[in-house]
Length: 359
Image 1 (cartoon, rainbow, N blue to C red):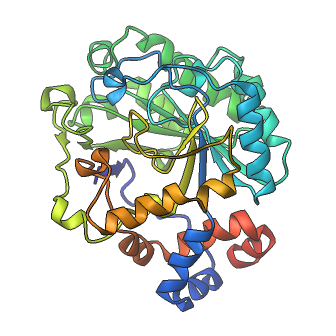
Image 2 (cartoon, rainbow, N blue to C red):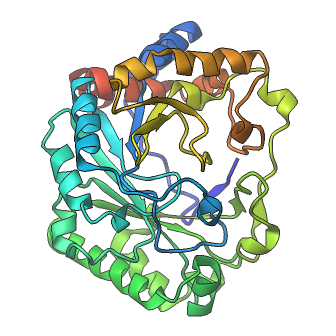
């Protein structure tokens, strides 16, 4: 699995109440699996799969499927059904691509925010186009969390790993949107996810980093030191100096249990197809339905997804899963994330109960 390092290693995770802990520990293991089979607890939409960067460590440059924006009617149907199905958090992050390339992004966020059932709205971006809608307009759109992936340290390093010459613009965008966010009362949580060279002093002591850290807080910053190989497409020379590539998990281990992603998430792609995994499925191999033709609930309970789960148990895995480094057995995921599953389920189905359990 990729290793995300916190800049502040002493940072403590956000704690839930003892009541949530008690509920999570009390439920039998089989009930968790049943709950996840009946209700997806994570949802995302890929409103575009286009990107304006060409990162050396990303699979985007290898993607063959058509690069398109999601038609607004398809998006509206997906969000409307999600709200009717209980809602919850909404993630705009695509498998590859950048949400801000979508010229209708703010309109889409505002539309989603109009549904009371939709709670936190989240996206990852490379920050190249952060100014396109106006900082304040973007911050007041209804977005809850803005996650920024970038390189800090030198213009040359940025160009080497992000494949363009927008370093100055990106730094300016991050600083200005962080300042504006603070000025209007911090309606959006801004987090920084660094793709940097291994020697921390080469970027941590820069004026750029220190300015951003002061604006958003070091507790909202992390960095990678182990990168995904995207099925062998990414090579050691593609990742920042001082970092490593993750190793695939042996197929003999994977066939013991389906991956947790088959029980957790629906992800609507830009063309309306729906996948069950957002990790490294560049070509949308794992299609479980199409939102133009079925409802989200029909897709989650449908034959295709059930077949993927049962085929996995028989040793018949999707090709993209065979080389994936992010696999985790569903039972292991449950054991390690009992409270998270309960909270995500309650967020979708019983928001009032969630407030009681986590206050």
